[in-house]
Image 1 (cartoon, rainbow, N blue to C red):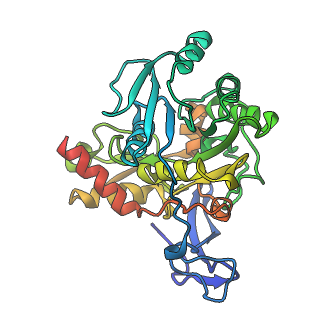
Image 2 (image 1 turned 90 degrees about the horizontal axis):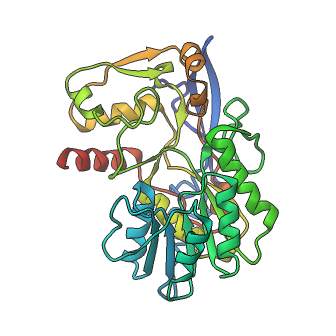
Length: 364
């Protein structure tokens, strides 16, 4: 990772650290200043009344066990959400198509959400009032409308998991906020944005919804790799161990904030358990903003090897893979809105989380 000034400048409330990075473009390198809020990293000025140090952050607790329904609870993120809910003493139901087992302790409801009548009937047979619905598989506006139609009459809380791919990769701000944004209108990110718009048009009654927009999610249970063509690669560890060169678009110089899966699951429950977040959309990203190649360096270091990279030209790769544009941009975000709602942001360091993921993969 190459940097300009090594000493951060503290300016204004939240003690924003300004890091100057050299980042890639097709015409060479440009320098950008990235403000990083350190409110929850122990860097706040003690006289900043609107700031809270990390050890003073609100760590939400539930006053009773909840009845939690997770849509898609046998996947990477959704399975983590289910396990976290169970560990907290909640009753958990999982809507799944039955292709993979659900975590022990959860009640499986086998249904396909694309069969609207069967889905509504299956959910209607739950023998307790549902407090919180976590929808990890809402990919279209029709899916979001189904949430409104089925769960609105239940007066449940809904957290819909969206994506940072809703933001137009060619028109991003640095850092990108939730509200001052340009959005995609097609592809995966565009459909996710249309799902969000269904909720926005409906309003927050009777379905009290919130939306989270995570970036790259990593951790045990998933494959390693965060940038094409070396993303989610089942053999990444083997390739690094053998000394193979890892192809990365732009040499991996695109910035991003990977979020550890357990942190994201915790944020989902915190967002779903406070009134301050009803009707809100929130970025969720990890504490470290790094060049993507640094992710791979951390993986290589965890297995005691040196990373070798082949740079794939951005322009040619994008011309051949236009649907991958959302990967080929800087992906770092303001978390001020999440923090302002009283939710502690993700705080697992990237090196720690990737070390756990590498350990999990090598032991499996």
